[in-house]
Length: 63
Image 1 (cartoon, rainbow, N blue to C red):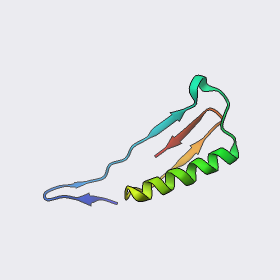
Image 2: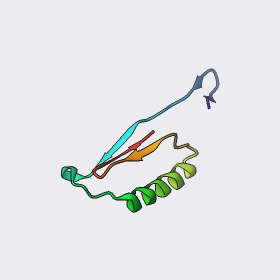
Image 3: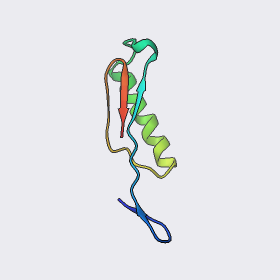
Image 4: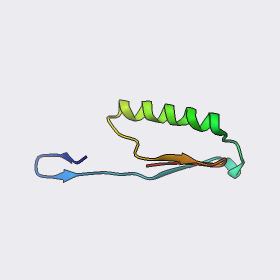
């Protein structure tokens, strides 16, 4: 979805990687699901959209 201004059209995407300190294996499936809920709710408040979300035991990817 493109947004528009006075004389412009734009689409801004951000790829964010959140990493656990020292890359310790601290994220399990339950925590990953809860993180997705929290991030989705936060992005709705900012009028943004979560395109992709995935992660492993030591990091999470957001697009």
